[in-house]
Amino acid sequence: QVELVESGGGLVQAGGSLRLSCAASGSIRSINAMGWYRQAPGKQRELVASITSDGSTNYAESVKGRFTISRDNAKNTVYLQMNSLKPEDTSVYSCYAAVMNYYYNVRTYWGQGTQVTVSS
Image 1 (tube, rainbow, N blue to C red):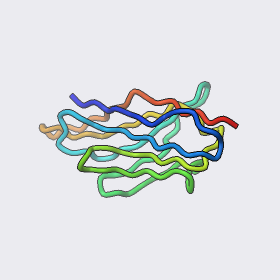
Image 2 (image 1 turned 90 degrees about the vertical axis):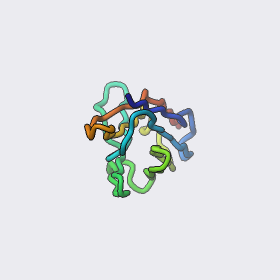
Image 3 (image 1 turned 90 degrees about the horizontal axis):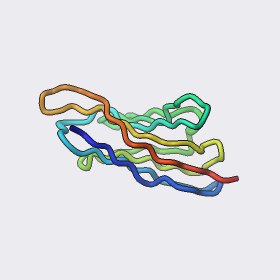
Image 4 (image 1 turned 30 degrees about the vertical axis):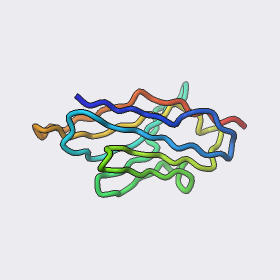
């Protein structure tokens, strides 16, 4: 079994910064893609950013130039540095990881979600 634990959410004023972390633990041989989704009340879930095992990244247009995703493969951890935050970034942010176990099976796991609130 694999567990993803998120941290770093909270309340920040517009223009401020937050850094989210998501650490994976458990039966892990390797992790392929990792990333972050967000979903605000009444809105569709949106892929915010993703990163492959070799460091290739992908961002939603709405966060390009403001957010940076990174990962530490030795720690099985993915980070999301969020700068120049806007009220429209307010959402629940959830991390995911595509994990290969010791039987070479790949499954996607999710974190519990962390609230990010940006006040105007």
